[in-house]
Length: 126
Length: 126
DNA sequence: TCCTTATATAAGTCATTAATTATATAATAT
DNA sequence: ATATTATATAATTAATGACTTATATAAGGA
Image 1: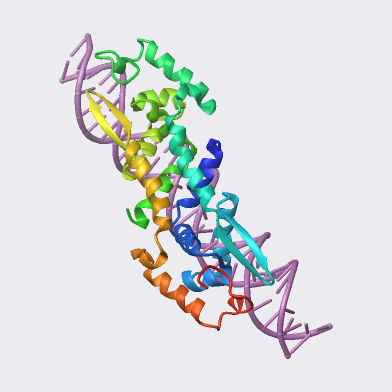
Image 2: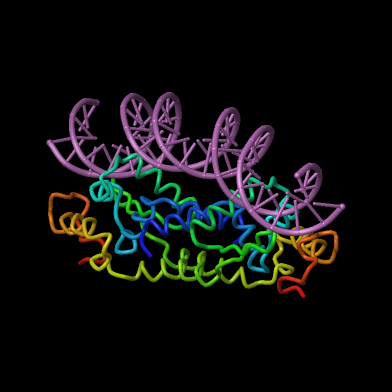
């Protein structure tokens, strides 16, 4: 997982209809026409939401004759969410995508140019 | 937690700058001017992203003289993400916000009007 | 074959979000 | 007081996103 993938996944989750779709697919796989019935929105709207979920790799599709059944990738979803929490426990210095940010932060903390760190040393960096 | 809160939290997480801010605050609390330095974007942009995170209840602010230090609510974030995963394990019938959806789904499954469920009974509802 | 059903994609519109510039507020320092 | 620094809010614009209608594709049934 990298930042871009997490962003895409969280974006996919950040929409009420898609959260509903996920909750429904968590119960069982459903085809587009069933989601249409349940959710009461138009078929293209559903196809588009499903595409967003698929591009975030949170669902997979199974074509059965003329129908397409969508399945939730529950393991993947858990890996994404728990993975983000675990990632936050990695020290900033060890986060590959944050080396530039880490360097900037070190400068700020070590350099007495920054007034907000003067009076009493704040924060956990001693 | 309810659907609206989850939607708001996921929306707040679905943006690369906010993910970066969260990763930085996971290391230690930072004031707006420090985030400005590190992220290299304008101060109002940062304030606005912090507001989104605050409205999703993922950060808290500590005013120290003229500075405002932002802290990550890591426990809350974990509760949101793990809570969503746990919620998905609740049977649809027991999800209070999904009773209408559940009823619709039952109709679909019990009613032989729906062609896609005819050939072989698909899905886990037997 | 032709018609119907299921789904996807395209194009257009409207709403939401992100970023900028400008301004307001609050605290400190002179 | 006045000036400076830090932050927030407002207003505007630009970019995304969601939804609609229309159309394309694919499969099955008459």
